[in-house]
Image (cartoon, rainbow, N blue to C red):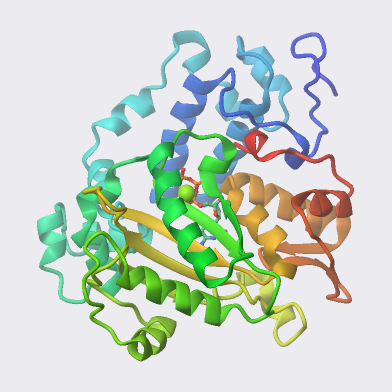
Length: 381
Ligand code: DCP
Ligand code: MG
């Protein structure tokens, strides 16, 4: 099942999570077009076809040369006949991609789903049932969630992409403040930047420290300091108590410091497949603060995710937040299907006994799954 005559080293039987996905690959143009189609299928609720496109894209990203013919595409297991037959391989174009780019539904859906807190289901309802077409229409909507209100408020800023230099500067503010609270704090810039991307849509960081298993106090203190301190160094509008109680369930808005608004600050809810694990030892103690920040001296607001995990859950949290989303999915599916283990942000567990497998590093996780280590730069699946 190797394609040695065409693409030496590419084997159809290699598990998805054992392939290398460099940022630059040979089939970028085709993958970009398939992404448009995949996105459109998701928007119209055609999840099965969207998944088929994602599978094909994953294989193409790992494929060691540009695909040159339908026959070649057909040899790749993840590429079904429908995708292989796309006119791209003869014309270099895909008609549906071109028509999609000028299609009103897609344009409006993009506008609406670019509001933080608005997913495809809400956007479709607004488009089809309420006839919304513009942000002005949305602003008149009476039942916007707080998250959507914040999303609208920073709409233009949050659409601007973040360069890695700014991401590092933003991350450094948090790292410094965290170390002023806990000198030995562990800190990793995760997300796309860890995978070598030069641009991203937000800044994701994961923190930990060796001391307590309960990291809520650490996160509360960090959020408090970051809400209070910023380039304006104004008086904090919130007493420490109100921040500490407010941020656990709701959010703080219009704070004078580095953190401007808090979208979510809580323990993430368990995965949907977590029903079996309720009340067992593998409850997540990972805490998160999803917020909007403004770096000192900058004028554009940025989305930032600050994640804190106890030391025992740090490696898997770093792994889980390093992405890509698709790579995480493939790794978790592998753990489930071939190792009878559950891999989550908060740890690696034996599925049956629910006992945690100690993992001090990402390497430990791959090793426990019997896998070759794939470094972050090769996880751009
Ligand atoms: N993630 C997660 N749980 C969430 C959100 C994200 O586990 N609620 C994970 C999946 C992603 C990673 O964290 O792989 C980072 O999420 P982003 O959406 O920020 O994705 P990237 O950083 O890869 O992309 P971008 O460069 O667009 O920011
Ligand atoms: Mg990111």
